[in-house]
Length: 89
Image (cartoon, rainbow, N blue to C red; front, side):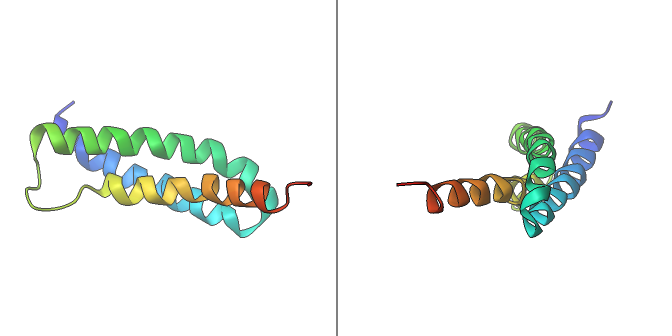
């Protein structure tokens, strides 16, 4: 597969999985489903950032993978805050 095409596909997939993972923070019961989705989002974000760094397809622009990685990290940050906030003393 063409690296530029794989770059575009992985960028959009990282955004889709990242947005899905970020929306899972809406309810605490959805976080259990959001964590695996966030993991897949991290993978696509890493691929996208790697291809942007290696081939410089869009010079001067940030890769979509950065936003996807941020969105994918929201359920993990939310879960950590909940664990430390409601930790029994």
